[in-house]
Image (cartoon, rainbow, N blue to C red; front, top):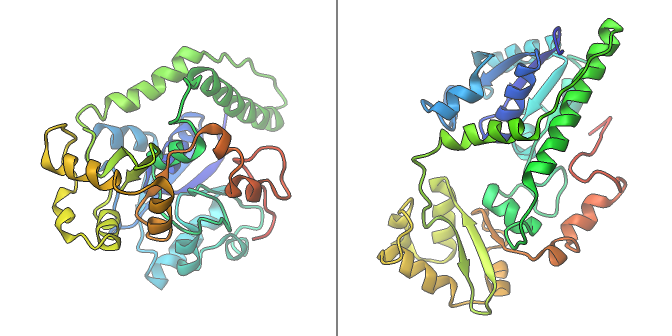
Length: 309
């Protein structure tokens, strides 16, 4: 359906890379831009191979002016730029949307970031556990993932179908199966079967019976957490598997239970260590972040449209 569309994928982590895989499955030419010195997640794993299937790969050091110009040449040939960098990284590399339009005025630029442009959370790092905690989904009750995933697969298919209709003048029948969509995700999970929960990626109870989530998957996030607490002795706990009788787990359970949720928020708010409180849905839906996100765009919160940035 997306024959003739070229997508430039600038993403090291799962959201951007999985979006690129879906677009490739729909027929787009997807060109992955990989930085040689950068950290590529899932490298050498079944999941990584799954995410890269059907894509072309080019290696470019975007910190090098000459190779960055090569990137701009790719931009001029693409209809879409799919990017999973933090906004501050794009600014540092001088590859923000406004500048890229010089090379491709009609470029569709899709930036996937944790909190969006100009968020109250700035450029803080976060992972899946944090987003679930902050949205209220970790708090319960059961969330109808399959039903909502079916809706998203349908929207993706309809948008691709509209493009084909516009290009060919022909209609198309789209058969969306909710179970098939869930099995697509199950395949991704199965490829991480050896991944175990660790003390640096877990949910802990606080002194006031609240809960907080730490998702310091990368070592530098864990180091920032330890530095903010002035606890260098915790550095060696990085990636220790969860076990009820393990000293690392016991230490962290006791540590988080020593302060209230609010005290932890105040202590770690600007530490950029992938920390978040586990919010009930009622609190998540009245958060300052959500109110900010609604400004000027009261309907779909996940997507904001910008003609200029």
